[in-house]
Length: 218
Length: 242
Length: 50
Image (cartoon, rainbow over all chains, first blue to last red; front, side):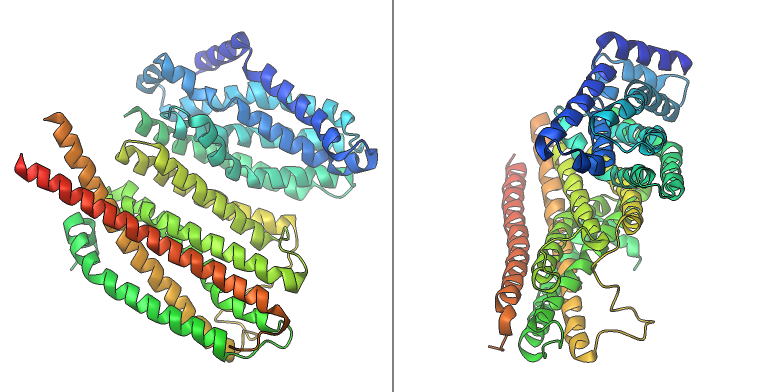
């Protein structure tokens, strides 16, 4: 499993698509928003947590269809399915690799981009903490979506249609954490709820995703 | 007769052909009675004026929008556990009907909201969760139509329905946390003192019965269509092999 | 016609939209069913002839 993780990470780095692209996309979204709503810093300060969350979520979505599609094309997915490790484990490792190449860089970059949107100072900690706890759920849910659509020729668009509604609870709690953080309210309740969703997703979704993969490989 | 007799497509078709005309007729009867009663023969509410008449469409369609998803969840589970094709096809048949009910609930809600709350749309938990339910229906139907092999499609949509249900419930409670709503609480619970008054209650019950019957009729009718299409698919496959 | 007061437009449009949608889904199901029936009859006819 470690070998699989390392292999996935190496592939992501080498093709450069994975995290470079997601980060660049996140940056562009953050830059475009002030053009849309105007340069008024007090407005930006209010919407900054929400924009950063939505931006991170969309950036996460970008690389989802590559999780299984490339492996399916060159046949290594069939090899993985017959490998001695359970398919649930493969799925979990794939999700972890996706998180390490997109979720983690996004989390680390978010405070930096927060400066651009004039995020209120107490918000930085909570935004980063929220993203760190929330993005694993995004990767896991996305992996499930990718497993559902891996057999389709143009699954990318359908993938976003399926995955985005599933992102709603994470987004709500994540944005709430950042919002409360910036306005000096206690953000621990939504933070705990979001961590709960992440824990639940990582515990249960590998089984659903592996089931979907088995159907697709039949 | 065991409940699982329905799982035999031939038996199902026989039963469906007998039930469907009656169900449609009863549904039409209930809907015409309930809506006419509600529209022409109920008084206006003292605060809401005549807009209270929208309730006869709004409440039943909203109820059935959720119940349709619940029915899809159950049939998906039956398909995953017992591999009865009729069950998977029933879930497929119910989805567009459920989506129509969701749209009706949203549309009538928006039309009702405009004079009462002064806005077509508010990001109220109930309204927003219906919008998300609509997205779930959309994704479910899109996944069905995107996959060519019928059994693969049935399996994958069933898994999506399961996971989607969990997340739909999660979203519902997340939304309650997110925003306090404009929408009133339940007015039809059996155990509460302050319910809707009888003048509105009885025609509403008839309308709910009408929507339920319409849903049943449509699901049986559409499932029969799906079974025919599946048989057609099998025949054309056999012809291509020959 | 009952007197709908100042909300006549809202009530009427709510009924119109809902009834249109209900009729639409029933009509769609009807058309799909008829098309499937016809195609199946045709295919079964071919299967018998062959």
